Every structure is written in C-alpha cells, then in structure tokens.
Image 1: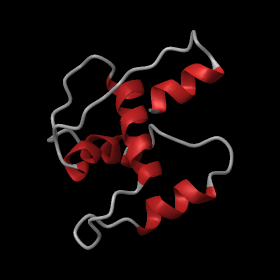
Image 2: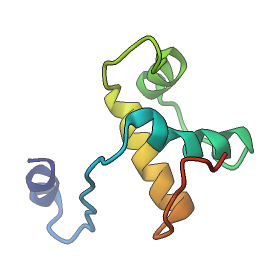
Image 3: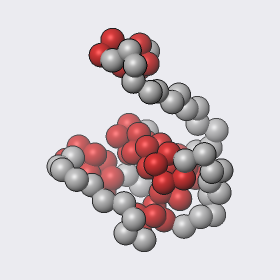
Image 4: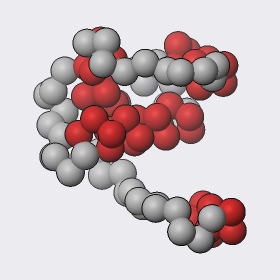
Length: 90
C-alpha cells in the first residue's frame, strides 16, 4: 500500500521494501550506537519524531512507534548500506 501511494506521487522514485526479521529493540541498537558517537544529527524540526524518540521505552511500551521505526530503517540504510548489521555494534 505504501509503495502504491508513493508511486502516485513519483513513478521513478527508488523504493526499498523491507521486512522485519528482528525485534525493534535489536534493530535499533546499532542506530543508537551511532547516535551516541555523534554520527547522526537532524536538520530541521521534527517534533512528532522527537516526542516518540524521547518517550519510547521498549521494556515498558510494546506499541510500535511508527516514526522511530522508520528512522531506524533509514539510518541503518544510510549508515550501513549493504553491510550486514550485527546487533552487537554500538
């Protein structure tokens, strides 16, 4: 569905479909590590994303924060590309 909506806007845009095979917390660990290293920063204001980022606690909240999840996928692709990312990276 998401792909169809994006294609309505731009038929030539590159889309990479992903399927989660690991839990959100495991997927987010390498991204958290590069945030900690100061290798990621945001340009602009993203109040809804930032609100999810500071309130999400995977130990207490099992709901899926959509913006944080999208951010994890995007940063993983940008930072690691085709590399296999080990959850132990931090």
